[in-house]
Length: 390
Image (cartoon, rainbow, N blue to C red; front, side, top):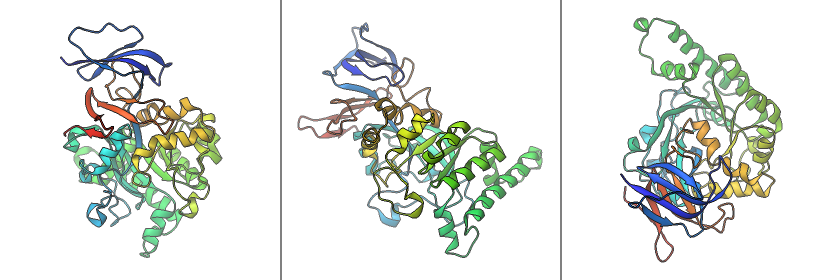
């Protein structure tokens, strides 16, 4: 049994008030948290030196490993844009776990991510939640699949419209989604022995049975209203990805109990449907009772800037506790891994990050990172990050 005691730490559990004390880890799991923890004689003691100890950050919407930085077309596996319905395509089959972005994530305190297909298709494929350190992606998996990615708005209508194919309008995109669900319902209604092999309907059936959420890329308020409408029609669990104008109808989103993965924030208004992007939105959504997470959409915003986006939201009115929850426990809940990650609690995995100080102060760096109790990053004498071997 491997036992580690992280002592002399300012601990922010997220799910409970901050405290000064010790976190005890045994075989990758947290076994004690408090100001007066009994430390076994055979424990490895790590003195945090008064640094801030937080759960690892979670980015619930990235293209890490499928959209490789600096690789051009050779590393671009985000969208299979050869058919509008690609429900059975799996992001896990395209993830390169040694892409440089994974190191950036760890250095930035991000220990878990949700890797999505892109938004080029009305229905893009299956997402996967993984840790950010590992040699083989299968060993990094936290939940697979973690959702089914879909897109409304400009991206699919532009891509297929330029080809003179359906869908070329917003109403065509919504129709494509409805047709796919209707086909899946017919497939589900048949006896199993009578069903033809249909991977697309099989994937959509998982959404209809509420086994996984429907991850709806949407920016404009009217697209968000369409997402809410379709979710009500088919009865599935909806998650809004991006939700740029969701703050304009925050009351409707909150009433529907739909979480929003807001972002990216540190970007220009690159197209019409994001012209109302604002760093005030996460705070406005949280104040309205929406479960809000903050995302980078990496590589749109480099993943190591996840915490900087949370700090920006605080600058524009978001409560600091809400901002930290938006990159820890809230995304863990959306991804269905809150029993393991997102807060420092007894029984949860020891995915922990030691910071110089408050991570919402962008001058502070991560000093050490653990995933499931194993140290995966520390800083050398010169202060340079050293990533553990995979």
